[in-house]
Image (cartoon, rainbow, N blue to C red; front, top):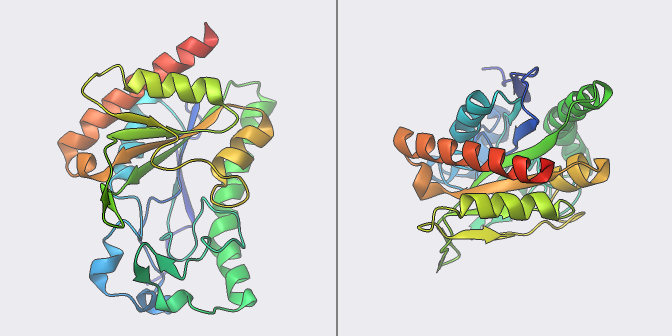
Length: 250
């Protein structure tokens, strides 16, 4: 069976200022890698993809009339939100799971994975952002992610988080808009933080380096476990994104 295209672009001409990216949309591992030596159960876990993120991103794209770019390969093959060459780009361990198929791979194989999956995705993002810049279209880059409720034995209290670096005004406005529901625990730069050159690519490269607002949204995976949860969070985030953009414009 042939591999899917490395990137799926939806609604490229959408009128929204938001450009949505879902870098961990898929848990697909090409057959030639033999599941990287992992049992099927591991490939269904958060280590292989961001569970629920693709469905959430697709619904957000429809609600906002926003362009969306989705990845087509597991983050265990190559992580599209990591700079090429860093240890977490092609991880030998994820949480407490050893990835046998990534142990000691040669530079040629690393380069092959970058050519097959990493560069096509980010080239598509760059091309879209370049077209919007040439047209004078206002643009805000938003990565759509999800996180496991429990990591290395520690429960995470947040329902959602917003990760940002240079776009502090937008990031804080977005976190505040989500947290307008007092029942929610929303983190700023939680449960992760942007680390340019080490653990992050999208925000530093497609946002901060261009001088445009960029942030990642993280939603806890147990809240995205069914269609009702996806719809609830899509509606909530669509409203919050609109409110945050409005604050900036005002």
